[in-house]
Length: 343
Image (tube, rainbow, N blue to C red; front, side, top):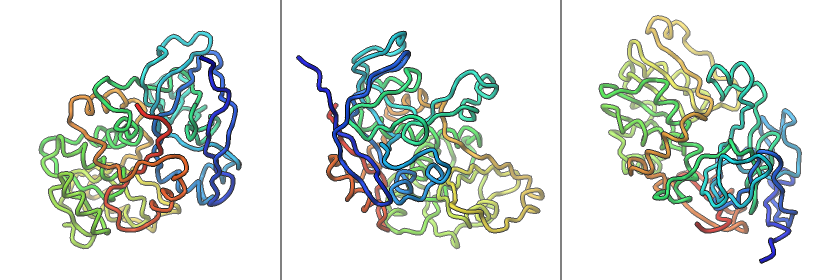
């Protein structure tokens, strides 16, 4: 059977503009693989790109028109010269970050801080909002047979939540607070509660807070209701400017803070004295590139069910309405997936 020569792709052509186009199917170069996309997750970064207000656009990494998309799963359909790590037919989840693996930070084991970092759909590598995507063979993890590609699509954001829990050393005696009820907040809740003594979720949208209870939150609280000096670990996943000070206020003596959310501008003045006098450790969490395997293990063993976060799955032609839905308040399930092909 002849292979198709063109593919359907979804491009951002300007602020609040999406277009479906037919483009040539990309070919794999040396040590690259071609993946037939199954599902693509839309995240907050994509929403910012859609509105034309993004770090990646402001700094010239992306110029319209471009193919977006960095949370994806699919099946390997071909390989370039020298690509032997992943076989044709393998079901894979893509890595957003693609490090060089040779700079000083990569050699130190801090690949998320690669000095020559590339990112699928964000800088230097076209995204996965298309029927086919080409990436280096090192930029994927194989999905276990008992894990659906739909569920595995959320592994890309989940590794960040896993990293936050690992970096703050969440343990069995810890009281954890998660600030934020979006995808990263909900994933942080789901992963932290596998270990922690208790996990409270701090939010403002009632429907999202109610759903956090369904996912296993010990309590859901509004910011003014949360007890100060009461938590061993605080995971800030909202990206709200004022939440840095809230995280400090919530921490008990010797507490640990993981900053996952990224505010659009500088946070208001924070109490540096409280950081010192309470001996608080603060960790910036940049993705979790080394946690794909461990996160997939959680899915394979049934400890984590990411499908609970999916609000809607739709075809390429529904992408515009899904972006609109993501901007609406009071959603319970935060995740939207574009289906390109089935399993």
